[in-house]
Image (cartoon, rainbow, N blue to C red; front, side, top):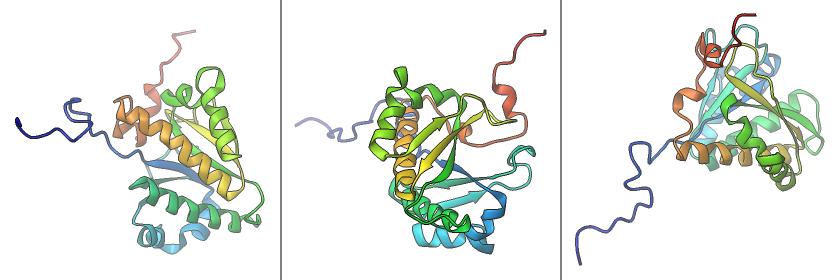
Length: 200
C-alpha cells in the first residue's frame, strides 16, 4: 500500500475546504431580551447548551434597528438546543402558548436570499413543507444592513425546524466558499456593500 489514506472527504479542496460553522442570527425584540436571556446576556443559554451567544450592543447594529441581533455560534445540534430555549422564552415573554403560532425573524446575508427561495420558490416551499411553518423571505434589506429578514410564522417546534433547515442552505453555501465569516458580522458602512443606483 502507498502513502497515507486520504480519509478526509474535503481534503485538497483549497483553503476554504473546511469552511466554518454558519452562525445563526435572529432578531429578539428589545423588551424581550431580559426575559429571554436574563441579566447575564445569554450566559445561562451558553452554559446549558455550549453555544456562544452574542447579543449585539452599541455600534454592532444600525441605530434604526429596534430589535436586538442575537448570534449563536457552535455545532448545529447545540445551536438548535439554544434556539429551542430562546423560542420557548420568547413565546412566554409575549404571552403566546407554546403550541400556538408566533413570529421568529432570522437575519440572513442579502446575497443568499435567492438560494433560500430557490428556483421558482422550490427551496422555500421545501422548508415550509418540511417544517410546517410559514416563511416570508424579505426581498428588501433591513435598513442599514446588507442583510434581509426571514420571517417565520409557526409554533415553536415549526419555527425551530424552519430555522435549522434555512441554515442548512447557508451552511452549504459556506462549504462552497460562497459565504465568509465577515458576511455574518455587521459593521458601520456595511450597507454600502449593496450596489447603489447611479445618480438620478
